[in-house]
Image (cartoon, helix red, strand yellow):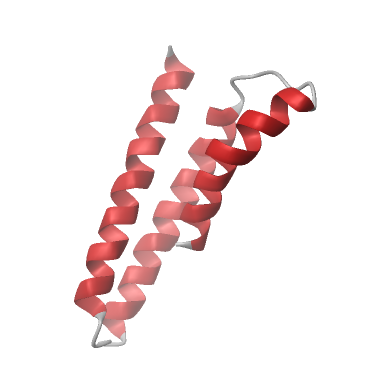
Length: 86
């Protein structure tokens, strides 16, 4: 979930303000967002799997949280792909 949070932090706080200030071209967010999103989704699945393998007593609540985070990251991934394609 840390990687998912880092992806959101980069996409919505750091890159929109820092990239223009440094003279970088706007529209570079998808090039950072897509790989970070994919990595975040992979690690979210791995994290959720660890809860289930360990037979953790909070595996169901954590599964719900992980699925919610994964849904948001997937929406951001689709948005980045859409921005890249158009």
